[in-house]
Image (tube, rainbow, N blue to C red):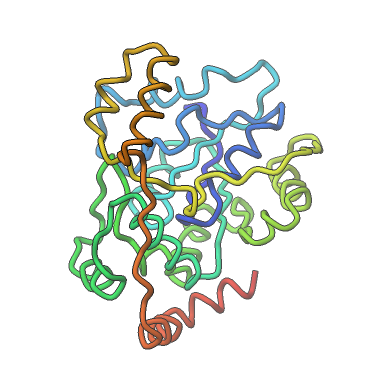
Length: 272
């Protein structure tokens, strides 16, 4: 398989932005589908190695690094092991965010998309009842505590891939000093230095809207763009346009409890 780099997350830590940044380097080709979740899903004859290689059909002749970014890998041990066994000497870039901040962002993101309807407290209780390794292709999983469990998953990634093949990054650094972070990435991946003079912020929670009429959207898809744009404007005027869903604010006791629960994970983050 072509892929020799995986960016497994964690979720809501900036992996979408990092994916786009890396793809701007002339010697790096990131997959056309940002999150194929190939190694998290059971083997599918329709989505085998040839399918995964096709995600890099846009690569140029000078490409040295073929990467994909699927946030499910960071919290699924079978996926991490499978990627290590099926890929040839893969490297890993793991991007982390302050664990409580990440958890809250993850909850707000799912709520803004209509994937979560429960309060944070009830959502956390529901997460505790889920099978450990449940994964579906449509994503949006209720992995709040799990995806902030750096004290377990970071050592696990290092153990499976080897310290020399794992680069750890902070999402705050990517947002604050992207050139410095990208220089570290390029050095780690052994590609030429390259300056990227643009700021990328992808998949931002505050930008999310829920379409009130998803069936209408599917019906409009075959129409010309000009017609679709006119109908979308009419939809907004009629009060049927996409809306922003705002998650309920968790109580102080919940925040304090989570801060205590995530103490070990915060220590891992602060040591980066």
